[in-house]
Each structure stands twice: as structure tokens, then as C-alpha cells.
Image 1: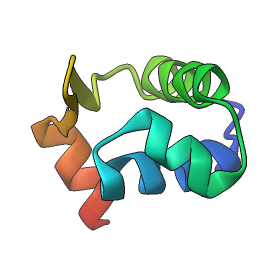
Image 2: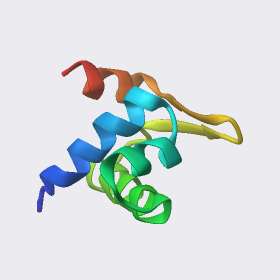
Image 3: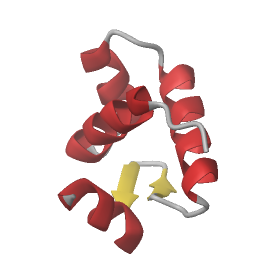
Image 4: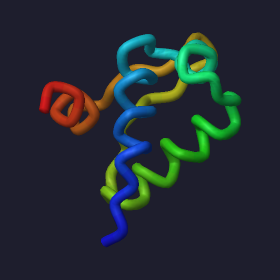
Length: 69
């Protein structure tokens, strides 16, 4: 498995702010790139990390476990 540690950094900020756009702003990145990175991380881990809503994101149980780790 090819692990991209940048994905974990992005995951941390998305989880911290519960928002892709705010995380992208803090990281100096674009929201589509952050979304793409989180989709790739979820595919690599074969799990869903976020519940996406129109008001932001919320961590799933698996996402909480990863964030706390």
C-alpha cells in the first residue's frame, strides 16, 4: 500500500475544523484538492471517515478513531 502522509495532515485539519474549505484555507490549498485527498485516503483505508453535509463534515466512528490516534 502506498501511504501518502500528506493525506493524514490534511485529514487532521479537516477533522479539526469540520470543514473542507476552512482546512484548505489554513493549508494554503484549494478545496477541490483537499476533497480529492480525503477521497483518496478513504479509498486507501477502505472506510468512510466523514459524514458530509451542506453545513460541513462530521467524523464517523472510524474517523474519530483515526483522529484520536
